[in-house]
Image (cartoon, rainbow, N blue to C red; front, side, top):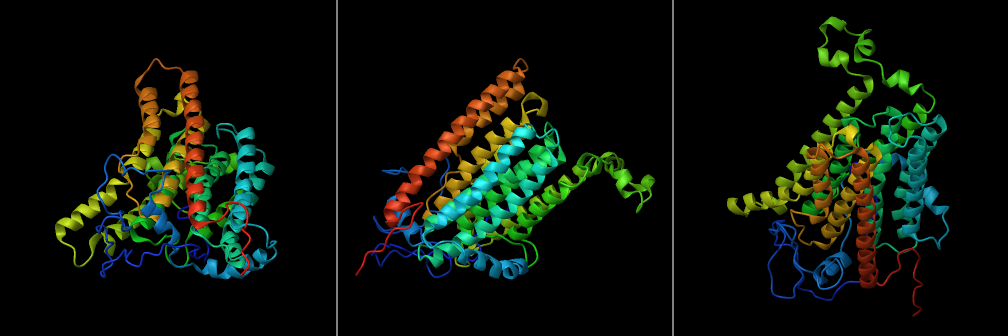
Length: 450
């Protein structure tokens, strides 16, 4: 997934502060970052290099809780497929019981990803062997089911009158962790474990998802499509259908063909570049995916750097340059995670261990960006949660005496650490938001009579 899509869900306010002076705009689109002491202020373009401003309790400041309480989800345009499938999503939502909380709908969707991921891990532990056909078909079905439920949770929220900013955190929080499942499905039937291709697939997928949240952090609009014909819906349903189709193919024979053989009916093999002739179809397709991902990420950078919040018409050139550097600096830590993943030699560790460790660390950073975007809090350029993985990658790369067993053990410990760190951070954050909005996370709160 690239952007995470609530599918026409508009989060509404359930409880707001009564401070009429809490303005976040100055008339030209630029956020107000100053103000008197105690007034909530937008800190998304403030300079923050090593550490975020301290918070008295929990992960969200009092100002941040105010902005979360008044937050409204603003998606970008919808694609033709979104509009075509919207009646189906609405019909399916109306079949749900009224007592079912929207976050439970999201969780049930995430459960599909969890079951399929466990089966893929069992039958293809390091994604270097093709799983059984029925597992690939089931993974495709789970992708479709997960995304369909992901499109229904916002509708269930409006239907039950329980829309809240917590829904966006839950929805997009599950999206960023389920990117690991999507990557694992493709990597398993392409059999790219133990190579740098799996690193390319995962880093481009997770970095692109992070950048979608990074763009919302600065523009307050979440991108989930590029035009009317290509977006998150198309990507997810295509991945699901493609996995189902692959369940009926001889995947090794199909994807391991050299491009010289694939293109022979259309081009003279002698005219093809040597690198193209020698590459396999699976590598060619992954290279195309990499080019598409990088193109989309460059588009995201362009939209942010020229947005009114960053480069408003009334801003001084020095301020614009500072704002742009601040915005770009927030990409430093996730980019360093991508570099760290490429630093680890593919034959030095089990691919699954590196994938899970990288996925959980990326998920933690992305969830933090999602929350800080809603809370309009300063996000530091240096995220210290990434340091353990960076150090481990350096150690595995530079210490030639390290054995594969020791490297796997280190990554296994990091997996447990990042899982604990992420769950702990999410738990504290959800409790803060629920207390602020006076709601429950997994059940609907009965409305008071009168």
